[in-house]
Image (cartoon, rainbow, N blue to C red):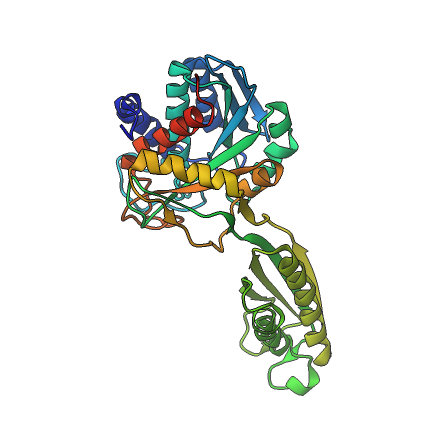
Length: 388
């Protein structure tokens, strides 16, 4: 049977865990309640080891199979943090904290991995060990990097690691995946444009920062259209244009531009940084001003290993009974990338059905996806490390 019978039996219980987490969203590394709940449940399940404080508020549980002849360890990762969004779902279990919401489904990810952990701790029908990894601060805080720096891979001797994310628009019970670069590297920049302020009626007496900044915004688009190989992906977006005055008749002395650059290839990423800094500075100089750029490196591109991707897809086909969809590359970021840089593995998407998109006030994780997700985790472990 594709869905594990025991997981089906646990569906209501896992759903209750998910909704409790949904009611109590926590941001970034401040996942104190969620982390404590996860650790308590892992101990209740009978995990052989439960370690808190990995990557500040991350939790890792170790479950040993009834055999351990190979000494192999598989890691399974779920993220726990929410988003600073005011929920608009009106659900009975909606967020009890105004301005915080599980708008990306991390409550579902955590609950599904907890369900799989309970099943695996009960059955232990595998030869080796599994490390269930619960990570904080995926939403911009690089919690994955923090856990890796804290020795996640080495301490638990993880040989391969897998992640999962829900996907609105993909039918419930189905999966999608791709080998190679899957999610983009996400870097941010701030450009401080300086000129000479003055009265709007006397532009000739100023060095107009509004004109300079406008030319910079347009010129930055040539990074994609004229500097990058057309077959390579790069997106440069200026998302904030801030002046120091709201007056109609003042040409400001300073303007701040902020934005983001998304790439997959390391060479294109480096080129984009170099060209962005040069274009901003030289464009400003043409008009007699100056531009200082601060480049803030973000998440690296998340790259699925070929062998582990094929394996994950095969497991997903067995669980769903459906073809696994070839996922498109995504320009959004995902800090599971840090774990995949440290260890081979693969990241898969699970269908959330016809729901609002992630990061939307009306989004809600689809509890009907729980049996498929928890069964996928369990099947992955039992298939990768079969007890014979």
